[in-house]
Image 1 (spheres, rainbow, N blue to C red):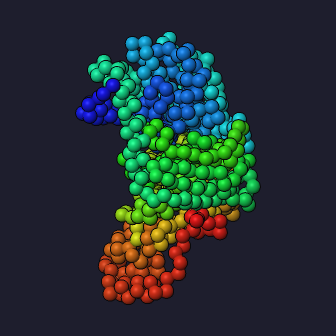
Image 2 (image 1 turned 60 degrees about the vertical axis):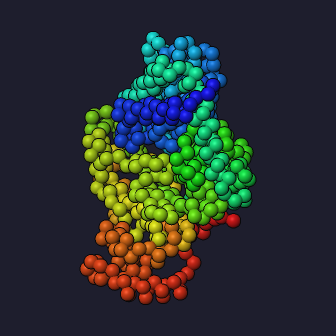
Image 3 (image 1 turned 30 degrees about the vertical axis):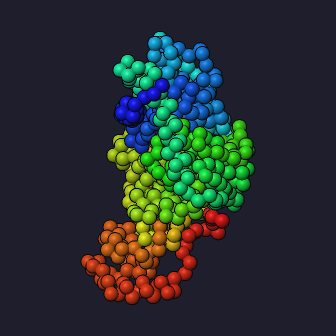
Length: 591
């Protein structure tokens, strides 16, 4: 069917509006702080075969929706009916990145014909498992990570399935929040379905289905047009995770080989380590998403995230690797792993055209949870927070503060919300001086986030980047690394590894130091007045301004001594050592 360009553009805009409305409804209706405050969720529209058409929310969720809907189609097929809603969170069945990511899938019918699926993913604060928050540092198999839902019918025209809901209620430490978030997901997908039906009434089903095909084909074509501009070559990069949480002295290797020929590109993970005992493994949907999002960001961030780019890219990812874990390997701590893999792909891609290079974000991304027997509301509760880093510098700008690279959300929950709902005080939340990777365009600075407990709690930490930090590019330096300390400055001080669980008591203090982003370009090329502003804002110290950036400031920090700065920078340029590209012995590298 031929559709005129104006109508196609109207369809694209209307579909974007529908999925954005779904996303906003999800966040505004969510019960748990991880959903309503950190926005750890997404919405998606797929066609009747499960191809992603358009999505909104967390980018890492969007491509894997394809695998979730394929699982629903395989399990239920022609047994689906109008009014049905399905649940799935098993990463070995569908596209969930880990067990807490519960997907809600609603088939959409028009005049008895299946035309689409409206879907939503939202992170659940607790679905059982070893520890509050489900995702435990001690998990050694997927069964330790919470209840697995393989794609069951949750809702029909007659209403919710009470048996399914009761199973979920009895397997959660935070049932009110879990079930409330599920209702928000069901609601947003049903609203999306109604809006699609209205669109069919207005433009006709043939126009809508034809637009689906066009949007997928167009996104794939845009990707290939950008690929054609790059030189044909092979580039590789590797990075190391601190450990798997079991063998603490053994870093875990991630390797990617990128091969580009004409309009074709392939990502080969086959030289990565075998899957490991601890919960840092990735399922293939994670590894694919890391590469696809890095590629789109490198080529053209305006290319839509739908099934077009996914079908245009090839992967080599043999089963049983840390990038393609097989059942029943644990996978709950995928956060630092997928961010490391994303940075490695960025690093390899930068060799094709250094003018597009981006310094990596800090590699301490993860999560922490505190499980309380009694919250401020008098019930059992789970405080679940993402630990953020900052973005790396680019060819044109400094890295943004407090944003997770592959997530593109500012995930820190408001202190007022935390202290209202949980028996905890946030005593510090502030940038750390000299924590950003230095460069012509520096990374975003790192920060400190510190908690004082007011009740007994079980604390679980799931991070990375304590030993294996990020790097700088094009002469920039790496940022300060992440760390976590219990009760700093006391006799009970304890430096925790990235994966740990501890029982805490009132007055215990959790001190998290979160990393900044890597720097881009030589620090002595940075605008001296930008360095002055950084000093005034507490991002760069006076000593670092002089010793790292070569900027001489007067003692009052009122202005730059341009003559002294020029002389110092000339001297530093003559004697400059090689830039600190990689901060550890197990350096990530491009060959």
